[in-house]
Image (cartoon, rainbow, N blue to C red; front, side, top):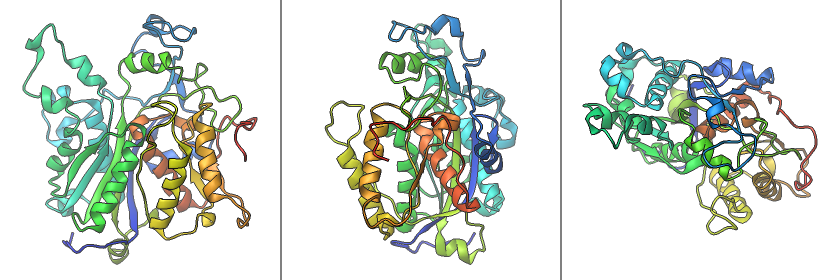
Length: 395
């Protein structure tokens, strides 16, 4: 790769490569697109290799130590990894959080999908921006009763920052390398920071993505006690029957370059990020309840950053978790900003969570990849489990 440190302020950012490993065997952009276009619901019962459903499940919501959901979006072979391929010893690999392994695999695949092989990337000013939040594997590995289990690779295997740093180390990438934890928006904020880093000339290319792995029942139980999970295991986004979200796991990584650099190199371009914005809801009715005013402001700022009129937007990939509170608040913000009497054509809305569940820290990158594929193919996949419009949403 030719090195350029010149800032590209305000320049659109091209998505030139995609790597993903998502529920339903959606390994790679082609398989993911096929899954969505076929309208596949990838939600299953909790696999036996995670934990015993009878030990932790009870249909009655709110029981101590129990979850009222036994469903989720899971990937196959989360325990499988080829350490030798990455020059990692089997001993170190055993100490690594599966989230690190998934990110390594999807980063490699994204680079390959972008048309690179490792040698041209090695030594480049390529940044790594990863959204990650959960640490189930750390809980499994750590024992406060027997500290003799702590080994040489225990810390680097489970510390969240290493999820990005290990990619930079193994691929010899010398741009910024960091993780972001803003809960469900983690990977979206990571993509925003990656775009800003590219525009400021901090890096010439970036890997941005997110990951989530579901290994123990603890968070399931916590969400169940908070009445957040769908007891029937279906994400019914924007539907009157919406009764909670469905947890999902997986990883996704995209390759980002300034548009001019991608065009000069003759890269395939899936989609272009013209602008982005970040804010926070501030004080709402509850810590976990979003705020419509803040979301409206964010949409306006993102459109201003992209230099587009909101009424020009034809498709929105929403958060769309299928909750009775979150869906109406989100869609109200979208409709207020993107709607109005001057709009001449409808705006389509969808949520990939209806296919694969809510990947939490990795949910945003799944939505970005879906949107990039929508633009790339010129089609919108079906939105599942929508039968009766939510009466609290003014469609």
